[in-house]
Image (cartoon, rainbow, N blue to C red; front, side, top):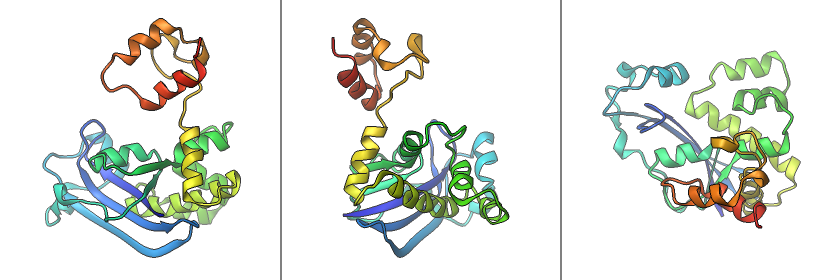
Length: 222
């Protein structure tokens, strides 16, 4: 089983084009293969101001790069690992690869933390010190975020007791099932409070969240 820790920087959130792609290989025993990659790409459209504030990659730095549509993942990937991995997965064209979300895992393992952003988690697991601050000066670079995510994976493995990548995947899938509604008339309520009429309506909507649907099936049987 081969897993890829991945991070992207993109032009925007709604219809993202990849302008920076970074990854590292990790084997089933959570060992780093020593093989890593980072490359920038030139998009068709400019980055939004919000995206610029996050990644600070100027258009002039991308002029001589390959076009964004050639950004691809390696072959023979069994799992993608990332912080809010679905965003990177969608930016890469939603390939048929299982995904392990370190954001969902972190929220499940440390529910009382005030923030589950990657930088906040690095302070939590690595300590509030000058070394951590120095590392985070490169935050939001795709290559740096992959390294931070690798550090987080090792801590999550220790906390969850996962024996291999597939077991961590199963734990991640469980963690991704929402327990609290985050939108709509039931926002802030436990999933178990949602009535069958609303669930039936939601199932008919386009772009439904598959994990929310699974949560309804598991927790809202009546």
